[in-house]
Length: 171
Image 1 (cartoon, one colour):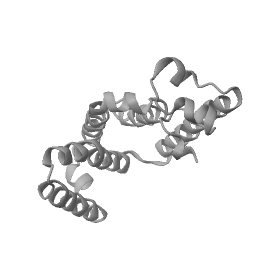
Image 2: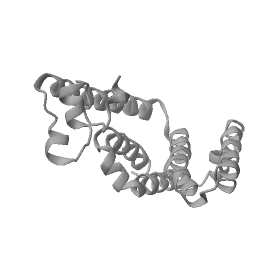
Image 3: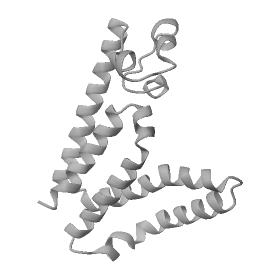
Image 4: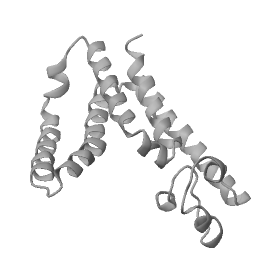
């Protein structure tokens, strides 16, 4: 049972990134870091405490070197240290947790589940975008979430937004 929790958590995180709009992700920004940290902790417990194998293998030296350089250069030498620390917490920490979690959890079977999740969620986001383009209406930004770009990208420069705040990521 413990072995499946990190895999389920990874799928839920993929869902969160795919379908939670950017304002919701910003409003609940701590959820991502806390959830990944908890999943990583459960994954370590499920591995029966092989913490050294998880953190200190040869390929991971570059990760730790990168994090050290980011912390030293990005936080300590920044003019706005608190802002720099917040961006480190919001972007660098989840990448580190996700890397270690995926490194620990990827096997042939779980890799297939994660790949299927990517495909299914991507297809759903694309279908939402196509429906938006065809019907000229995005129910997410019309009824649920305020989006300052909504009318511009829907009527003046038609581009698919789907579940994203700004359509640049969808091309």
